[in-house]
Structure formats: structure tokens, C-alpha cells
Length: 113
Image (tube, rainbow, N blue to C red):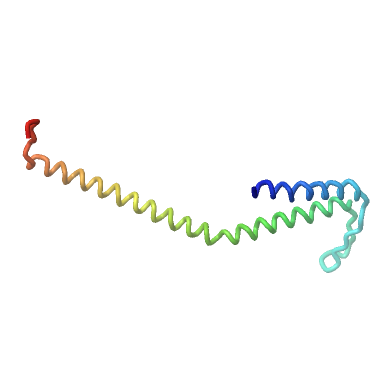
């Protein structure tokens, strides 16, 4: 259901951006006064697409930062998992050594017993 809602919201948004880009191809003056003293001419749709791209990158960065705790916890769990696997392997090796040392001392079983 969530995938349906995703596309239900995203498709009209795509249509709005496409219609905006087609209808606004005229050039506009962009002035970055505190940084640059010059004006830059660019098409309006390019300005809108640059703004969307910056928003996309910023949103991805925020999502990545929010997932930091989860990634840290996953790394910690992976380290614990690998330590447990090493301990299991060590215990199996010790068990095999103890079984092989105890094997001659055990009485042999016969089929009738």
C-alpha cells in the first residue's frame, strides 16, 4: 500500500515539474550580491532544477545523518556476532580435542548391548 501512495504523490509532482520546465524557458537574472557582484543569466527551468537537486542532496544528507545511530548499532552487533562465531569455533575445537583424548578410555559398544 505504501508503494501505491508513493507513486500517487510522486507522479503528479513529476508532472508539475515537467509542465513548469516546459512553460518557463525564459531567461532570468540571478544576483548573488553578498558573494558575487555580477548578475548571471540562466533559464528559469534550470534554476528550478538546480534548486530541486540541492534539496535532494540536502535531504539525502539529513537522512544519512539520522541513520548514523542505526549504522553504529549494526556495526556493534556485527562485531559481537563475529566474536561469538570465533568463540563457537574455539569451543568446537576444544570439544573435538577432548573427545579424541577420551575416546580410548571409553568402552567399546557392541551391537548386543
